[in-house]
Image (spheres, rainbow, N blue to C red):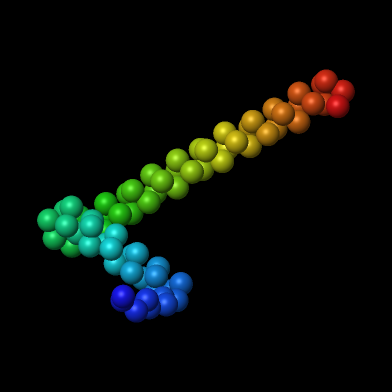
Amino acid sequence: MYPQTQQTPVDARRTEVEAVAAAYRSLHRGDDRAAPLAVITDALADLDAAGRQVEAQARQVSRGYTRAAFAGH
């Protein structure tokens, strides 16, 4: 049917970045100042949420080790 083009990881990442940039630009009606600010705000919020999730998982693992130590395992 259609020939498949093999994209390198860098090309694929660039395509993904361009798609995200276009979506934010469209969402902010072409405002070239508001769009990147929104991207950065969203990225920082995602990083913060991921950090909280990692901390919560670390606490759960730590509690598991503590319970096992008290239980004599």
